Length: 270
Image (cartoon, rainbow, N blue to C red):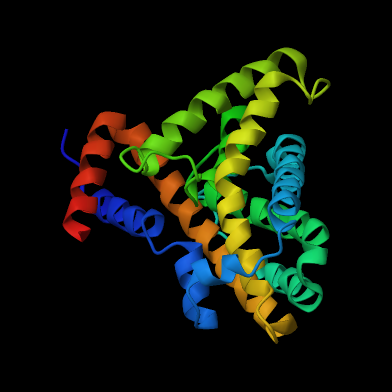
């Protein structure tokens, strides 16, 4: 099967969205300091605080996704509506202003709020790509996008990449979906859900650490915090756009062809 020109262009856009510079690189460019140096400025207690905040945020995102996304009526008549990225960015910027003004102490409050806003935005993007938000697998994939936006510290460099991370996450998503189909959310502490949250947190915490470090820069303030959160949500909106475009094309052409074309496009970027 040969991919149509319009779909090849869509895949090319998806590759650029997924493979774009990391959150850390873009934040470092904003504040004018290497991200490694910023992370080195974090206090000793930061790692445990960030990990706890990330897990809390993912748990909130998971609940939002499973309980409310189906009400978006993703299969409305006619073409899927365009995603309202601008409104979500403004809301995220407002949330980031709080983090910039109050620093690390505000992270446990601000991060679940900004992550919830991002989850709404990711779902909006998924719907615009024709995804069925009433489908449990799709709902969990919206949460999974948080893991596609950053590498976990223990990742093998040879295995890092969109499809490698996605495959590992998809297995956890499938197990969680099967559990929810049998038991609903009455057993939220079940191993399948805990594993999913843990895997997502391993990747999401990398980006959260970079965000938190930048917000500790002296004089970053509320304005800087808003700008950092705008970069943060823009990154995940782009990853979501790329991921759900890839999934749409896979439904049309099959995974093997799309994966082959994706790798060709990545090689052409190098």
